[in-house]
Length: 106
Image 1 (cartoon, rainbow, N blue to C red):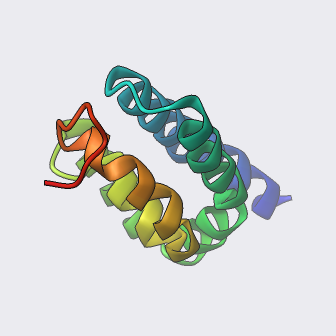
Image 2: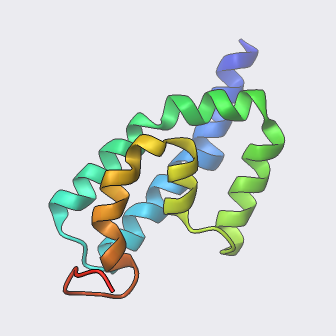
């Protein structure tokens, strides 16, 4: 029961806002839809790992949420922290996120 409550809180306060922020950043950077789909799929797949980590380390969960909210940590960096397997999808989006609308690396 307590685990379910923690999972619901982490989902509501960390995972959903993280996914929303990542999607908005990708769409705002005009990342191709195929890349957005890959990143968002990876973000959804990272949810169980984020819940497990937040359950084991609530301070990490709170500090991570605050750092993203105040802008000291980029959402995609937090996603990589939780799910290192998302690196290829994030790497495909990175040129767009870094202000290169042509998608080429700087």
